[in-house]
Length: 442
Image (tube, rainbow, N blue to C red; front, side):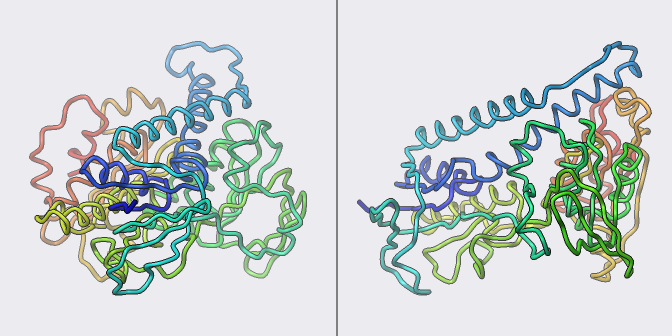
């Protein structure tokens, strides 16, 4: 049998592409060597957010007296938190499997390897081997994702350190936790274990946490987390680790940090190297596409989903004619940190605009100007920052405060559609909502 489309990798890019292709009549086969949902669903986005929500509920119980509600001696059971996380993952994996069946997609569990059709201009069928069986397809989409980066730190290979995978399965709160890396994953785990009572220390090589996010708001979030007891070492290099110790160096001075547990969180890297794509996600071979982390451009699940839609729409356009959606746009890819408070941004940052030499002005307002934010965040603080171009266009929006992860969608639509400040200001926002802060800031 020859398939219209073969997809290697069942993460957000892979299952999105498979469902869209199947529903539009393409005979599709999807290969996944582990579990449907990929890293995002099984050991990334969904599991971490499930744990973080449990931590948020626990924190709300501990601080409920601020709202006139009494919760005496609230406790948590980490084993039950982990069990709930596993239940959520199983439910969502089953949902994806149901979608594949509904779309008529054949799912094959096993490691798939492309054995024919790699030439740049080949028009022949593509052959893939999985579990000793050969599959033939007219088109192929590579969605093989990324893996945890492991730096060559002396002593690391002889130490029982955690990556996010082990941290998600752990059922005991360590007395002390040193997190190597202050990116999104590291900071989210820092807030989780800090809320549960661990002494958390974050070591970051650069001069601020959350590289790529708005630097001013990242610093404000770090200040909030410092108040909660998390210790940060910025512009600091880890020079060695042992079973219960992390040796660091800053400005030529060395010191050691005790660590009952070490969590390595220095980023991820694509499983395949050198995969280049055009604006329709095609590789040098027009019959082969690549989406998601494997391209190395934006290692975010929501980016992968949109890339998959673009790729399949291009395949459908080439076979059925017409334009089904156009090229991939990276103009408004939101970034979110699911801490408490949340941090989110979309579009340009001040740092990127300065680097590009683009003129801009800043509109900034405290979240306390939104009545509902004050009602729901007793003694909480936050910032809404909007970057406006010389022509009035909205270039970037950055939010610190709950629920920034939901509000950033409004800003993303405005930026993607090229809206000006005046155009967005003319939109009627419901009252009272936290989202009104965007209009107030304008």
